Length: 210
Image 1 (cartoon, one colour):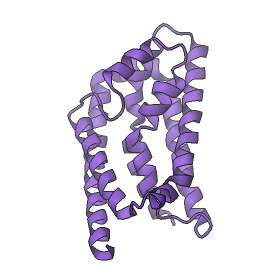
Image 2 (cartoon, one colour):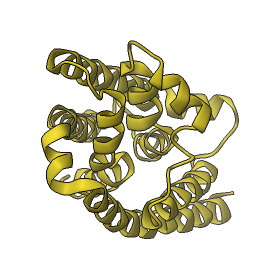
Image 3 (tube, helix red, strand yellow):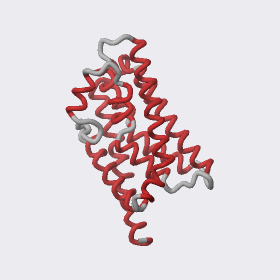
Image 4 (cartoon, one colour):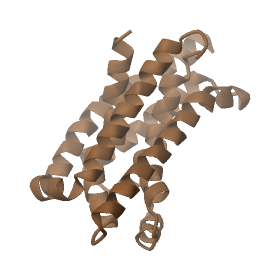
C-alpha cells in the first residue's frame, strides 16, 4: 500500500521540480509586494491542484474513449518524461513547460497565477502525463484508498511548491541559480531512469496484451 505512493512521490516531485520555481517566481514577481506574491502562489497552487484532479478523474476514460491504450500512453509518457529529464540534466530552459512567447506574455500579466504558474510551470505536460500514467490503471470505486493516497501525494508536492514560492526571495539569495541547476540535474537523473522504466513497461504491455 505504501510502495506505490512512495514511488509516485519520487516521480511527481522530480517532474514538478519545485526548486525550479525559485528563479521563475522571483523573476515574475520582482518588485511586487509580499501580499501579491503570497496571493499569486496560493492561487497558482489551487489552480494546479484542480487541473491535476481533473486529469486524475477523467484522464483514463478519455483515453479509452479515444481508443488509446494505457500501454501506448505509458510509452509516450515515458518519452516525454525522458526529454524533460534531459533538459533538467543539462540545465536547459524547459521547452516542455513554456515557450519564449508565453514567457514574454507572462511578464505583462497582472495575474500570473493560472498562466504561466499553474500551467505550464507547476502542472505542465510532464506533470499531467505522470498523473495519467499513475491514476489511469486505478479504478476509483474498486481502489478508493490507493486513489486517495496518490492524490495526497499530489497535495504534498504542491504544498512544497507553495512553500518554496513563498520563500523564493530568501532561498534564491542562499541557493542561487547554480544551486537550482545542481538540484535540477539530480532530479533529472532520477527522472530519466524512471522514464525509461515507463517505456519498458509500456512496450511489455503492448506486446503481451496487444
